Length: 204
Ligand SMILES: [Zn+2]
Image 1 (cartoon, rainbow, N blue to C red):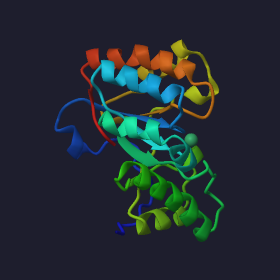
Image 2: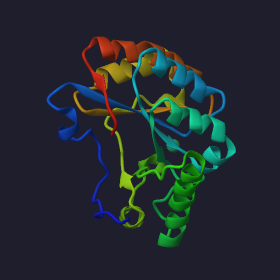
Image 3: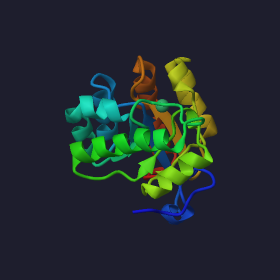
Image 4: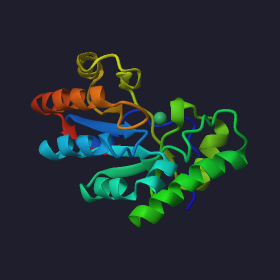
């Protein structure tokens, strides 16, 4: 079950996954949300692309139908702690509980044990890497952050993604944690632009 301890999270898609083509990984944090996640899924379905959802454990437990629809559409599911905790200063036992409860909640809902993890606020620590490794969880960060959680406007979110993106980028966006209607509007714009620019959507 254990894996080697990471010294830093993964920031870009591994070269081995690119196969010499232009790839991008879209990731969505802080869901599942009964209002916004279905909107995001509709956009991804329309354009026939997949994403990775880093879900909050207690939200996954509260909205099992939403998380099952994510899986049914062929997307990957990782976890983002049970309660969106800032793990940086937490002792090992608390980290284990926050990560482990989320992993168990997703496994119970989907029948598959997730193995991808993203720390809230991007706050990893050596303890977090050690506990994640013991639980078989690979830590995934990002290299493109349009700061959509701050609601800067959908046009701004979209242009930030398109300005920052490059081959093997991991794009951070959010389908929960507040009013995500700007993110939904931005996705409607930038997803087809990325496709037209030659990007193939892959996992992290
Ligand atoms: Zn988050």
